[in-house]
Amino acid sequence: MQTDLSKKINCVVIHGCPSNVEKAMSPERRTYDKHWIPWIKKELTARGIKTETPLMPTPWEPDYEKFKKEFEKQKVTESTILIGHSCGSAFLVRWLGETKRKIFKLILVAPWKIPDKDDKFRKAFYVYLVDETIKSRVEEIFMFTADDEEVDGKESLKIFHQSLGGEVIELKGRGHYTVGGMGTVEFPELLEVVLK
Image (cartoon, rainbow, N blue to C red; front, side, top):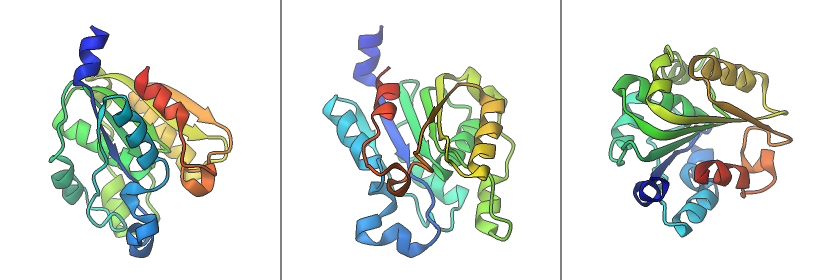
C-alpha cells in the first residue's frame, strides 16, 4: 500500500508573508524560493515526489481569495502533502476547512494566526474559526515550532494544535524557521516527516 501511495504522492509548499514588497520580491529574497523551501523541493524531487512551490500574489498584503485562486491551480488529492510556512499555514488550514478536502499529510511550519493590531490585510487573513473536522480528513498532521519562536507564534501554534491535534515538533534555536532564525537553508527534520 505504502509503495503504491508513494508513486502518487505530490507535495505543495505555501510560503509565508513578508512584511513588505522589497522583502518579497528582491531577487535574492523572493518569497517562494527562500529559506528552506528550495532545499525541500530539491530533496523531494530527487526522491521522485512532485513538489510545487507556487508564488502567492502580493504576500506582503495577504488576501485569502487571491491566495485561493492561485493555490487552486495545484493538484490536491488524497495523496497530497501540504506544507505551510507561517501565514502559509493559516491559509492552508482555512482552505481545508472551507473546501472539506481530504489529503494525506498537513505540515505546518512556524504556523501563524495572530494579526498585528493595525494591519487590515492580516486581520482579514488570520481571523477565522479553525474547522476542527479537518483532522478527520487528514491522515497525519505535524506542526513545527522552536523554543525561541516569538510569543505570538507560540500562541498561534496552540490555537491550531487545540483545534487540529497532531504531533508538535519543537526544535532548538530555529526561531521562525527563516534563514536568519535557522542559520541554514537545510531542514532535514521536515524531510524526515514528509518521507515518514
